[in-house]
Image 1 (cartoon, rainbow, N blue to C red):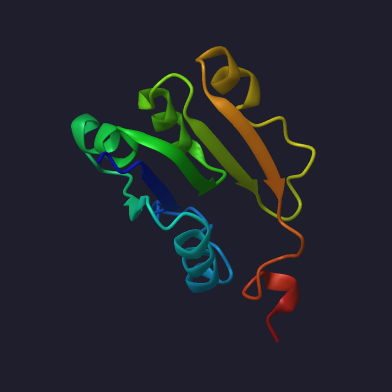
Image 2 (tube, rainbow, N blue to C red; image 1 turned 180 degrees about the horizontal axis):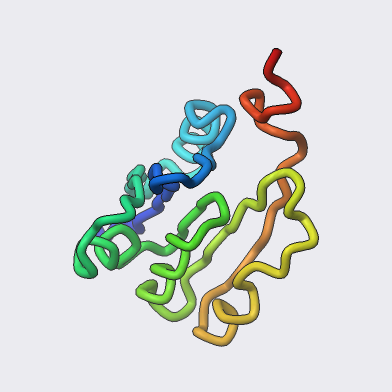
Length: 127
């Protein structure tokens, strides 16, 4: 039996770039495992210096990719037609158009989720 692949693609630390991650990654993974028990779940971390083949491998064959917004999401163009991408927009970027048009035109099912609050390590939250 073929098990569909689900990928949580984390944004790696680009030099000088801000990290974007899920506040409760463990809860997200637990939820996905419970909701989709017959799927293979992988966590990949996008690295800025990765070779092209490595970047394609992060998402190749995935039926669903969930990731924070970032340039690393351009690798979603390697996903199969009809696969689903969920892009999570960080606090303060809700109005940014993102890559929706590009992904929809490439044959992906695209959904966007806006982060409900700033991350705890955001400057306005650090004493």
